[in-house]
Every structure is written in C-alpha cells, then in structure tokens.
Image 1: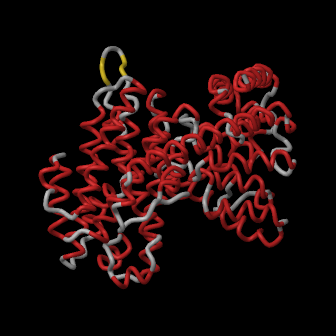
Image 2: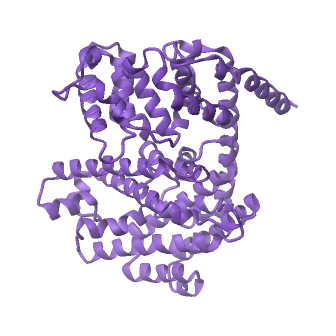
Image 3: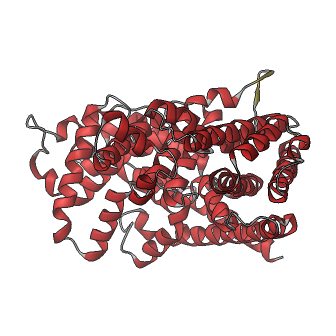
Length: 495
C-alpha cells in the first residue's frame, strides 16, 4: 500500500514538473537540465531533456547575452557532449586573446572559470582551444583559492583534484540535495522549486532502499557460498565490491546487473590475491589450465583452498549466466563470461611469471597484459551480456562495437591502480607496474614517471570522449556503463 502511494506521488510530481521544460527559456533551460542532473533525476525525464537539448542546439546562439556569457557557453557545451552530441569548441575562441590569456573580466569570473574548467574535460584529442582553456582556468582558480569563502574554496579544490566528468554522479546526489535545501547552490536554477526537491528526495530514498535490499541479498549469497571459511589469503571485500557496482550502474533498472557485477568484482579480488600472494608458480599454471578448460580435472592436486576458489568461481559464473537469461532471455552469456575469465587469468599468470623470473617488461609489453588484468574487459563482458540488441533482424555484437572504449577504460583502471603503488612497493619490486616499467624504459625518476602516467590518463579520457560522443543512441547506454567503470574506480577503487 505504501509503495503504491509512493509511486502515485512520484507520477504526480513528474506530471507537474514536465510543463516546466516549456516554461523556462534560453539559459534557464540549461540551468534546469543541470539541476535535474545534479539531483539524480535524469532517468525520469529523458524524453523531455532530449527535446530540450534539440531546442538548445538549434537556438542557443540566439539566447540573450549567451555569446558573452562564459559560464552559459561552458555549461551548454558540457551538457551537449555529456549527452553524446557533437558540438564545436570554437565557441570558446572569443574568450581567449592573442596572448593566450583570458580577455577582459573573465579572469575574475570564478563561476564561469569553474564551469569552463569542468567543460574542458570533455575535450577530444586535437582540440587545442580546450587544452588551453583547461590550463588557464586551472591556474586562475588555484590562484584565487585564498580569497574564497571556505565552502566555495572546498568545492573548487575538490573539482580541481577530481573533475566532475571523472566522477560517479550517483555518489553525490545526497550531497547535492542537501546543498539545494540549504540554498547555497542552485539558487538560480528554477528558483529551488519545491516539486523538484520533493521528487529528488523520494527518488533518492527509493534507490537507497533498493541498494540496501540488494546488499542484504548479496551478503546472504556470500555467506552461503562459504568461501571465506576456507580461504585465508584474501580479505572479505563484498561491501567495497557492491559500492563499486553502484558507481557503474546506479539507477533502479540495473538491479540485476549491479548484483552480478558485485559478484564478479568480489571474485576478481580473490583470484588476484591467489595469483599475487598465495599460489606457487606450478600451482598457478595448473589453476590457469583449469580455468582455460573450465574443467575440475586440473585441480585435483592443488591445495584445498585453490580447489574451493575454482568451484566457487565456476558455480557463480554459471549462476550469473542463469540470472542474465532470467533478466532478458539471453541464453548465450556463459561462453562470453568464461572467455573473459580465461583472458583475465592468463594475464595474471603472465604477470606472475614476470615477477618470479625477475623480469621487468617494457611499458608497451606491460600494458598489453595489464589492461586485461585490470579486469576491465571481464567486467565489460558482464555488462554486454545483459543486452545484446537485435535490430532489423541482425544481432549487433555490442562487444565489438565497444572494443576501443573497453580498451581505454581498462587502461585508466590499470594506470590509476599503479599510481596508488607506494614507493616502498616499487623499491621491493613486488610486482611490475607502469611506473617502474617507464622509469627503466626512459631512465627517469619516479616523479617524472608518475607525471607521465597522469598525462596518459588525461589523454585516454579524451579518447573515451571520442568513443562516446556521436555514438548510436542504442549503444550509448553501454558506453555510459563502461565509462562509469573508470569513474567508479577513481572514487571507489578495487584492491
């Protein structure tokens, strides 16, 4: 009864809010979309937002004062690209002078600079104007931090450290709702409309309750599996795994996907520990053969805990394939999931061989295997298995269409992991990392190597942007989920 009343109130609020899209005009339309985005309501108004963006694309240059408003132009540019629409960065040319600096009063427009810095992270390779805009806005914002009030300084420092485009939106909804209530933020955005606020609270509470229920179900599954009672070389990281899956697929419609991803991530961490800290070289060769053949014959002479790991992974992978069939009727998931585990374990085995032989690969050789051992391709296979689409009688291979995006996302996951490697770990040579490989390749210091890796990450984000922008609408949902893997890793890293 209570749930029915809730759904009725949500539908009532949605019906009352929809006319607002036609009532606001010009820059106000941009601000409304941004407000809805920050409050976690995009999924409730997809049709209205797409129509609004169509209008913005056609008419934005006619909005009163738009061409001189760096904040509005930056917001418009960002919203269009966030929704996969192509638009030119030339709109920023008028704000930068011949001395490669900001014109006029723009250097003191803190809100405009912050929006410009945020928009610049949706750049594609070769868009030099956006690279310049990012560098200039970063420097100006950094220089002005001492003169800002504490709240604004904290907000800007956080954005400079981790840009909005690299964040998981769902993790910050509660904070945005509280800021909306306080009136500190979004004062200009539809005048803090109480209908939007009520809907945001109801939606947030519904999703949070759903996540709590899923975690209870996962905890029961994990206890019944009994893995931790038989394995001592790894830690129990189910909760962290589930938080990561929320970062990838936050919205209500992804409940089954979320739980399956959490199970896969949990096993990624267990199997990674098995290769890193437990198995002998001979045992790891044997365990890998068992995974490749998906056959228990190979594990007969392994320690009991490794046998337990194999059977738990075997049973869970089959269970996930059954869940996928129940969810969408797709009966072909298991071969894709098995192959992804084979590739993952083969890469871990190669890295183990490097370590046991005292071999440091070149940075290129390292990344060929490390992007797979990052678990990005494995987790992507789980996502794709939830929805191979049929169009005009032909089955589209989503995995192939998303190949480049998976590669770039996996690279970011791996490189971010490596940046978390401590100096002591590097000196001990616990395992190869991109930092150590580049230090030896280029004969440079650790500091220079870390900066090089950070530059690769920034450039890889531009490649991700290219793969997402202009993508077919039916594939954008997959592109968003895959990209969210990198975002979730930055905010809730595995390992």
